[in-house]
Image 1: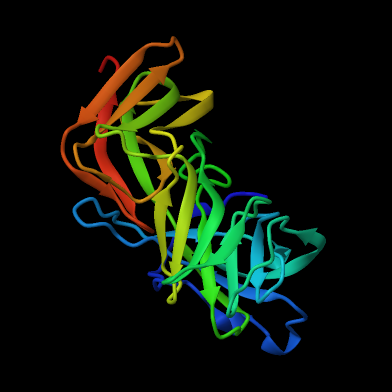
Image 2: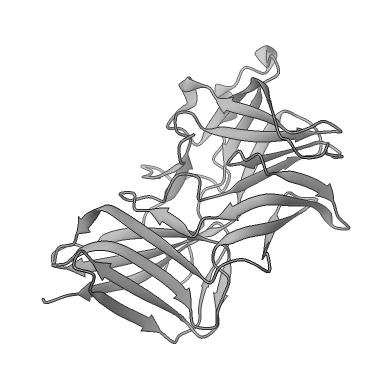
Length: 287
C-alpha cells in the first residue's frame, strides 16, 4: 500500500474532487467509487497553489457495511494518480475485529487490521487509526500511511466521499546543512502521534481525540540526509492530528553530524483538519 501524494493542480478543484462522469454505474460488480477531499487554504498561512491528494499503486481501504466484518478493497490500476477512483474487494481479506453495526457504509484509509467501528450518540466511533510518531521524508509530500481518511455513506449509493482526518504542518528550511532528522513538539505537551479515537458524525465529518497513551512528539527521518540550499527552501510535511498549539511549538533539526538546531515559536498556531499550516522560511546553519 502506497501513500496518497500531494500534487500541484492546474485548475481549481472543488472541496470534494470527484469526477463522477468517469464512472459506469451499470458495471459496478461489487466495487465502490470514491473521491478524496482537497486541502482547504488556511488563513494567513494559506498556500498560493491548490494541493490535492491522489491515489497510489497498491492503495487499500477498509469497508464496513451493515452488520458485516470489515472488508479490504484495492484501488484499480486505471485510477492511480487521480483524486477519485474505483476500489474492488480483495478476496478473503477481512478485518479481525467485531462485526460492525452500521446504517450504511463506512470506509477508512489506510487499511489496518486493528480497525473497529461502533455506534455513538452522535454517529459512529472509529478506533485502530494512528498518527505515526516516526515519519519518513518524502519530496514535496508526506509519508506513506500517515494521513488517515474516512467516509460515510448512509444512503448506500456506492459513492464514498473521503474526509481528511488530520492536517499537515509544512516546514520550509534553507541553509547549507544536511538534515537527518526533524522533531516536532508542542510547548504545552500536546499529543501529536499514536492511537486516535475518531468520532464520525451523521454528515461524515471526523473529529479526533488522541488516546491517553499518545505521544507528545513526531519525528521526520531523512534517509538519506536532505541537503538544504540557501536559494530555495526545502519543504518538509508532517502529518498530525488537528492540534491547537496554545503556547506555540518547537522544532529540533538534527544535521548529519548530530548537531541540533532548535527553532521555537511562542505564538499560538493551529493545525486543522484538511488544512496545511505553512510556516515562514527558516534558515539554519551558516549563511
